[in-house]
Image 1 (cartoon, rainbow, N blue to C red):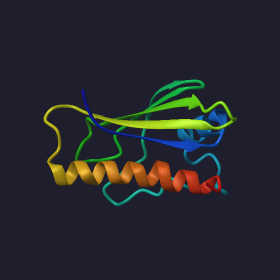
Image 2 (cartoon, rainbow, N blue to C red; image 1 turned 90 degrees about the vertical axis):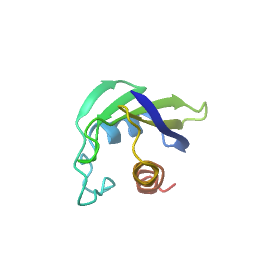
Image 3 (cartoon, rainbow, N blue to C red; image 1 turned 30 degrees about the vertical axis):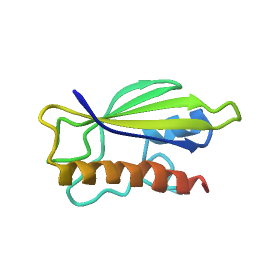
Length: 118
């Protein structure tokens, strides 16, 4: 698998983020995983509390994709959350790759963070 993109942002405490990533629909009062028509909910392929979650692909066009989340304490009660997109060879064309990265950034570093008031 090739690393096709990664981003890191500050998030709430690790336990809260871990719960949100392992059960995206778990809190109906804070929906954040709003998928597009060509996306489907991920399967949890790995969940190693409190610091690693791996999702299956969200995209029908790239069922080989995997998204790894690394959660590290920021030392102040929050989390430095890094998502990393992995894909099998060949890499997607630049347009699709840009779309996949943008969607992950939107879902994780905008939508998820917004549910926590960040």
